[in-house]
Image 1 (spheres, one colour):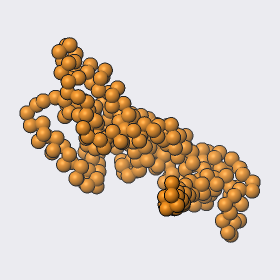
Image 2 (tube, rainbow, N blue to C red; image 1 turned 90 degrees about the horizontal axis):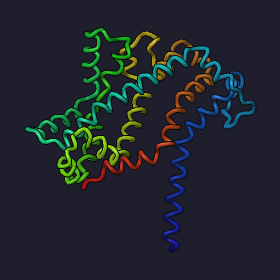
Image 3 (tube, rainbow, N blue to C red; image 1 turned 180 degrees about the horizontal axis):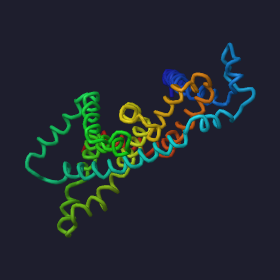
Image 4 (cartoon, helix red, strand yellow; image 1 turned 120 degrees about the vertical axis):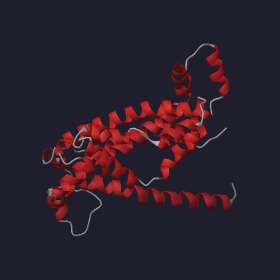
Length: 278
């Protein structure tokens, strides 16, 4: 490699390093603050980038001051149920648009994609009116139902299904294989990275959901972790004890970070497949 190539590589890696530091610093500050005692945090006129006397009391306070454990359980129920139902809905829909032949399929799919242009605010208003009319506020059913489908995920999975050669489908039909069995035995294993990616992205979306749960629930028994953090702030605990507030945020963030680190290769592979045609 010549000097010019080495210089470009050095500059590139230097910029990437600075970018990484900028992205990771808020996480470092969050974790650092969570281990500072209330007195030491308030006694710092100039913020310190290290902890002299780390403590775990903030994590204890985050669970005892508010029912953070209940909020975590509610979020797990909401996330698992929503993701499972969504997969049951979008997988057959993507299969139908990619493999089945029926009159007006292209028109229906085009109209279906046009739904992506509708602002989320309008959808939220409609969903709120519907759920309220059905008396489903402050229920898991009301939380889950508006999130059990996604036009984008159907499109992404449909494009992956369409990449599988038609010859496999015709050969399976000649052998007497039904559509459902072909989907389960052939298409899903081939498109597994994309399915895993969609699942993880939906889990992250549900875990971070804030506006809809906040709008549809005013009973603390159904609060999710995002609502719990807001509840911590509103009752004064967060404003008075920032380290404990940061400890609660760390507890909430860890599951998503671990999930991403475990499946990061599958996510990248699935996104890459979604952007490849032919």
